[in-house]
Amino acid sequence: MTVRPATPSDAPAMASVHVRTWQTAYRGQLPDDVLANLSVDDRTAQWERLIPRGNVWVAEHDGEVAGFAFAGPSRDDDAPFELYAIYVLDSAQGTGLGTALAKAALGSEPDVIVWALDTNTRARHFYERIGFRADGVTRTETEGGVELKEMRYRRTI
Image (tube, rainbow, N blue to C red):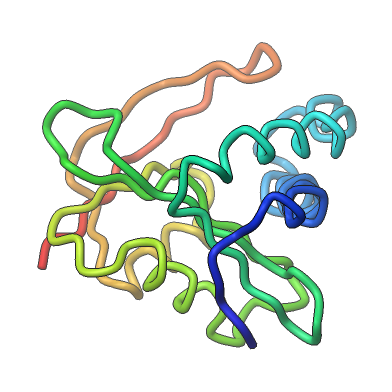
């Protein structure tokens, strides 16, 4: 397992991981047509724009990009730092890859938030294992015409 800063050449592999993980992690939580219409090309363009901003990390497992994490200044006024995204392919889950990605992306930040769908128990359990706790803040987003409730988790060290 290798965790390293992402480079622009990682964008296609990250996009593939992004789409594949959404299609497995969010099955039954997001509409099937939303998941079926996710585009690797669109995600590649997104990552090509985001990688140069920095603090984007990839994890390789068996020589292939199997996960990524992205963090930075919080979008919420009451928190300084946010874990925007962390995704690991099913085939690499349970290997320590997610924990290693979180450690790289979060560094020694003392106060960090992350948002998770309330129905995504797998992600919520992962965040709890690495020290996050639900802080009582929720929001509702709409995706594919479906309202989704998100819970905010916070880790302070």
